[in-house]
Length: 243
Image (cartoon, rainbow, N blue to C red; front, top):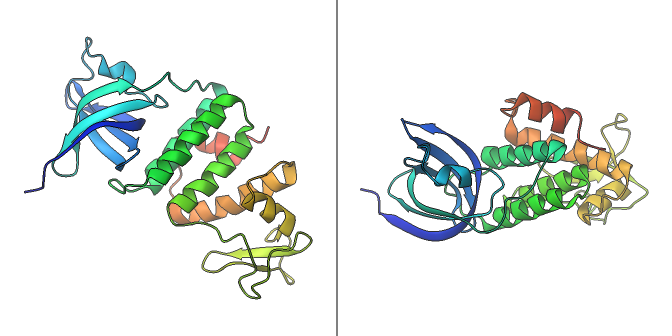
């Protein structure tokens, strides 16, 4: 029999929820100390339940639960602070971020760095910071937090630091190496890679390069199955929210 685990007042965000049985919900949460958790919120869909209004995406929460097996049972929920206010394209961006975490972070993989990266991203989206830059830096940070980080410091063949005036190609297994006769469009300017590494991304060209590079890496881990929401996938990936 699995060991019983009890957790009290863990900082968390709801990533996704869906109906479960007659009056309950199955809630996927990102928690600070326990990673991604699947919790059953019993009775939360009842009209008089106070949990339903709280168990929404982008609300900073404190959750308590007991767990024996794969799913936990939610025992308490309270708001830690006001909901993160996201509207329009920023709301779409938030749902995109949630889907990335759901697809890339396994349940039970405790990773406080992912929680910090996610929290910072929501704050940036709510603050009015450029959406494209915020998403690219979140994607970069998420990959690093998951141990899938991009080596953006040097040419893996020569060992030399990246040069802003040279072009490079990226190989997932190795990293970056100087472009020598590659087809145009497969290479990246050194200055744009350095901008991504230093988390600057302060011009259109570096943002465009970061979107292309990070998109290729994410596709490797996400596979050919598109994100669940076609509208989110189209708005974020195809259009890029570069305005």
